[in-house]
Length: 366
Image (tube, rainbow, N blue to C red):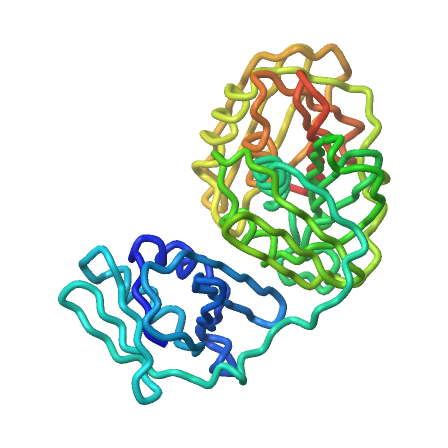
């Protein structure tokens, strides 16, 4: 292998693949990126056996072909910190020699035939969707995913696809986030799949907010694949039955409507006195007024009172303030609706202007 490539062109795929290639692995080769030349392009493969990412970039000059694996992080840092517009990658005596500007690095390699790849399987469903739309689904729900929950099906998001729409749902048992998009390009596909937490976070990083181009989504029995002009991302799916999320949405009739930013700022101020161990705040809802109270272990107290539209009975209820702020921050509308059922039931938070997203936060004892 002996190629010359633009440094900036190489840096972007190396950066995203470095985040997938694990630093501490029982298999050292999983810390590596596989470099392969095909059709006058350099293909870069990274995997942790659950997720696989393939990037491909144009090559300026091919002096000789070949393939090799090398530590993804070291190659990225060597290119990132070097000067010069181009990088020359040369395989010499089982070392990958990286020349960029006045810098030269000799990196250890491992045989390409030892590099693992996810088993190929059939994809029964395929559709196209805008990149920004899919990123928006994940960005509005990812924070409600479980983290190392023993109920492994909660450690990811549910994609419920039907009737030309995708619903994206996440819950950790204490809160729920749901958002959806409708697109005729999705077709008459019906599928329910659970995408793991790491895959969701990687796709959020991978997708661009500015790009409106269509990407191809393929769904198989145990695989989920997204193809963009620069990448092919493949993930294993969580094989489990997701709970019926519709049963988790409260059906209360005590509705409070207020300015989203005013409520958010009041919650932020009230949370100043709270600690990582104690995140509880108290809501006292009265006619056209919400009082927010926060206490800590040192007996310090914060009080906030804001005006909103509410004509129901008085309600007093406690919440985790971080969960409330996550939900309210994910809504972009100026006005939000909060629907209460009672002091022992969750609150439903949604935009007062559309019904594409909703959030449920369960109460906590204070």
